[in-house]
Image (cartoon, rainbow, N blue to C red; front, side, top):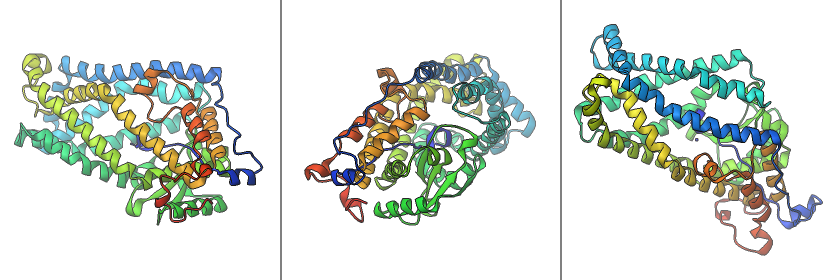
Length: 425
């Protein structure tokens, strides 16, 4: 999961065996029905599909326009005027100019998608000042990351024109690991206020659950997301000394304790089952594929359109929009495969959460609340599932929470060997 891309994972699934359910005065056979989406949720769903198509088309049209108009080549010449032809400074100056230009081009669409639309649907109370500040900070962070890293593939392009894509793909893995270590400590706090859990009793139960899951040394943080959104979320992030359990203050306020413990069990499942390194391997593989497409097609495109592009070599930094265009087109084509993998990992985490808490009803009701608070559609269409759904649909998850009860039939639990204490809480 990326800060915006994805680096936040929110979920919920819980476990309550027959005895635990009876202890709470609820029959084990009591199913939680999948609620029908509200009229507002369906409008949000349909308009979201339109915006998804628009944003993906935009992601192809903008770099294509920068290429075909020769604007990227003019940016490179401007950078040369400012800093000369010294390699690192030229790459840095070009990227700063490129990031600023694309930020301004994207600004109207970004403003509508991340500010106007959430307010229109009652999903945000964020002030315009906070939105603008976060957007500016995101731009500066992106510029810094680009300046520090973009010179590497371009240096490899100059030194090894045939194998640069292999070396760059290999380096993408360590880059993702570094990003995972740095983001929770240095980047996320730039956008929201992180602090200790206010409910110390709940914090103690979460840490006890983490101990049962085999997670040591984690700290629990409550992040003040209510200044940005009315939606709910939680995640486990980082590694080594940056390992942390994070709950949005919105989820703490809108879910009860049992539901929160299931959500935490789910997020701990991602950590214990090693989904982060698996996803790093997946995304590194996608980078390899994207770079392979660039290597196989970029030079022929440059040879055919060099007069319009304004450059003759892929190693010219003005080729960045061409690389982005080919990457975006490749990723759009393989998105269904990548999302199928992430949905599998989410189902595994749901199973983990259910097995460690055995609170089926709390898991199911947590998803019902997620549907309500996030304006979810529990039964979206096939195209949504293939191209947009990183998680199983809410309807599928509620059904799974209702049905998955191996402890009631004496069947073995898949993840029991991973628990320090296999007995239910």
